[in-house]
Structure formats: structure tokens, C-alpha cells
Amino acid sequence: MTNSESRKEYMRRIYKVQDYIETNLYSSPSLEELAFVAGFSKFHFHRIFKSLVKESLSQYVNRLKLERAAYMLIHRQEMTVTEIAYYLGFVDSAVFSRAFKNHFKISPTYYKKHYSKNCKEPYKISKYNDYVAKIEDESKGLPVKVKVEILTISEVKVAYVRYIGTYKNLAAQYSKLLQKLIKYLEEQKFSQAKDSKLLTIYHDNPEFTEKHKLRTSICITINHNAAINEANDLGCMLIPSGKYVVGHFDIFQSQYSDAWDFMYEKWLTNSGYKPCDSFPFEVYLNDPNTNLEHKHLVDIYLPIEPL
Image (cartoon, rainbow, N blue to C red; front, side):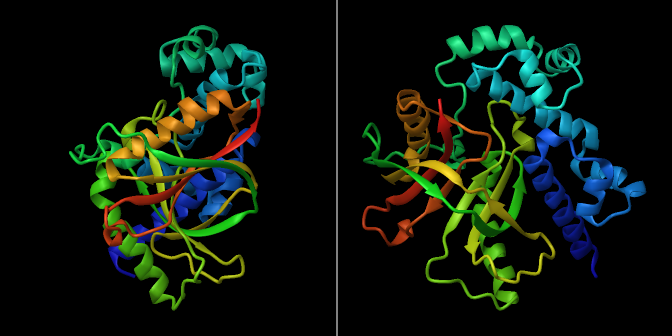
């Protein structure tokens, strides 16, 4: 195994741990549990994680919990600060409040009272295109074309390659990442089904997560029974089943941010629903290069539950 292959294998295992933490954040998985997921000895796992992620395991888990707490303080108005603290596994509200204030430089009580009231767009994810220089085309100033429906979907299995960094840098790397994903699957003689879909999952909220720590997965849907060898930086994960609002968009590249704005600012706030604790994603339905207007047909999926 070359040095490059070895590092990719290490990173693939760390990504699996990050996925596991994200899925089990409220249960506070133990060091032994996470070491087992990674396939490393528990005596060495902590140092391996810190060397690759540049945060200790406890710092990483704590940061994710605090970012989730900020999200819940805005969207879970029915929950008190103390209830959110216990829900996220903090021993008491005082410990939680200190940690929150150390991280965000503001108390959770003040944040809940003022930020959720005054901020018009407390939770919005803009696709990486938003960070690309704006394209001056005929789309400027035009409203996005959208059809919205609420669907209950079954669990979806995807193969993915992970990118950690700013959306601006992701834009520059996206084509290479997609080519890498397809190459990995071809090397395993995996043939895409006709109904396979290309999608992008956004694991973090850029409102709260530092830009260089944002996690994005470039994915292709695969059959649940498909045998994929998770090697190098190729991984598999499951998109949770549940209720989603789906926005079907017909847009120019420069309108992705407008599409996300529509979902959160216009539809969600008037819907009687709130986003639930899972990640949103985009599904791409065409090749814009083959479209006469170079328009993108894209579905935006937001996980929701009754307000």
C-alpha cells in the first residue's frame, strides 16, 4: 500500500466515525464504540483522530453538539434551554451554558430570546455555487421556477466521497471529486442502475460551523444489496427515511442560492412544518450542458416534521 493509499484509508475510516457520531450524537457514543467503528485500537484511536481532524475527539463531539444546540434554540421553541441541554447529553444546564457561551460568545438564553426573534434567516444552506463568482446572464433578477411537494421516502443507500472545506474550494474541486467517485465504482465493476441518482449532502450548517470544517458528501445512490468495498476514500452511508419537503427547481447556475432561500424563507416559514434533525441534500436530474438554456433541474430535499 502506497503512502497515498494509506492516508486515504485512514481518512475513509475517520469519515465513517464522523457519520456515526452524526447519527448517534444524542447518545454520546463511547471511545470504545467509535474506535470499533474506525477499526483502530482504542488506545491509539484518539491520537489518530486528532492528528487527522485537527480537533480532539471530545472537542469535535462537543462542537457538533453546540452547533446542534444553536439550531434547536432557534427551531425548537417548545423546548427550554435546560431540556435542550439534557437532550444533547450535557450533565446539567450550567455546564451546557458555559460551553455554549465559550463557543459562541453569547449565552444560550440570550441567543434563544433574541436571535430567533430578530434573524429573518436563521438556518439556510447555500449550495457551493453561491460562492462562485456570480454569472451575469439572463437569469439575473428572474424568480426561480419551483414546484413543491411533501413526500415520505424510504431509507436511501449511497456511495460517496467526502470533502471537508469551504464551499468556495468545493466548487473548484467538485468535478474532480465526482470523477473520482465514478472511477472508484467502475474499478469495482459496479454498474449504475438506470434509476441511480447523483446528489450532494450537506452535513453542517454554515451559519454555525467554521467554513474550513464544513463536510459535504458527493454521492451516487446504490441498491441496498449492492456490495461496495469501502476503500481509499470511498464510503457508503444511509439517508434516513422520513418526511421531506421537496422543491423541484428549473434554474440557472447562479440561482441555487435563490432556490435555497425560497425553501427556507418562503415555503418553510409558512408551512406549519419545521426542519427536523437530519441533513438536507440536492438531487441532480439533468446534465445542464445538454440543456439549450444550460438550466439545472434539481430537487432540494429538506427533512421536516410538524411545527
